[in-house]
Amino acid sequence: MAGGAPVVSICVLTFGEHAGLAQRVLDSIEKHCPRREYELIVGANAPGKKTADLLRSLHKDRQIDHLIEAPVN
Image (cartoon, rainbow, N blue to C red; front, side, top):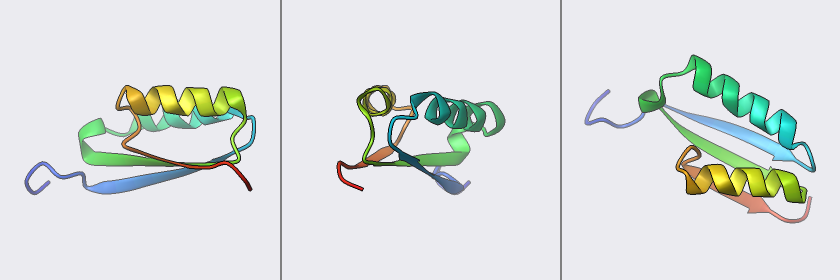
């Protein structure tokens, strides 16, 4: 890693009201990938309330580096 920059960008796309599935995907990334080696970009396409709340909370806690929300599919 040059200058402490992430080696890779991991992009995850979520859709609708699937907070449990989104959490499982993000937990798996956290478990299997050293955090210092990646940046996490999450797209939320027409997220349901629970999914949006989860992703916003993780973004606020800096577990998600970039959160892109699209309210309409």
